[in-house]
Image 1 (cartoon, helix red, strand yellow):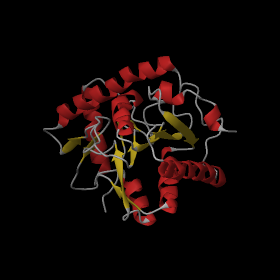
Image 2 (cartoon, helix red, strand yellow; image 1 turned 90 degrees about the horizontal axis):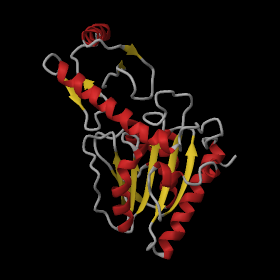
Image 3 (cartoon, one colour; image 1 turned 180 degrees about the vertical axis):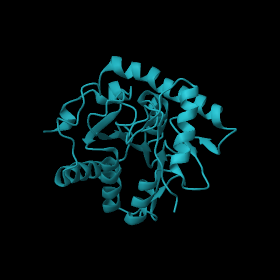
Length: 274
């Protein structure tokens, strides 16, 4: 099964991009997409990945293991970071964007600017977070390569090698998506437009929640507005859950504990910073 054949217009419909040479590979999850690209990048040359300090922690751990800390500069833009902006002034380089935390259409101008500046643009995404309307019936990630028209022959040869190596790696390690991973609403124009309203509701809810309890708790509302972080001085999780349930009930809302990988619910997940 070649998952790239399922949606020949994926880049046009999902990212709202036309007229740029592209290739998309679907994987079994977002982290598989990240690993496939970074691992194979480390095998074709020396690169130094530049990314924000508050980028996704698993990405940071992976970079340390792959020793992507010397050589040609590669910019890695992670939308989970509070430093992320829809801007990049790099020229003649590789720019990688983890697009997970925003609606895909929001990247159109940024992608076009990156390509105009003759950069290879690689988009990575977990489709569980925002694209499944809360259904979470499967896991899915994607890797999309956008290739500038003015790329030199030498860079184009290296780019083709990278893409081939990524595809071969995904197939050989079993992380390439199967038909069951590709959920029906992924490439539906109506659903993608509807999803803009849903994501706006999520961000509105988080703003409401933040403003409601910011005087009572040490809370940080992140730039993407998809979730907040509450910082506590003890590990009494039950005490925190009781407080949040009470605040939710006051708002006539519902409160869940959720093992969800999406951002659809008022939910609590916890971790300890060691």
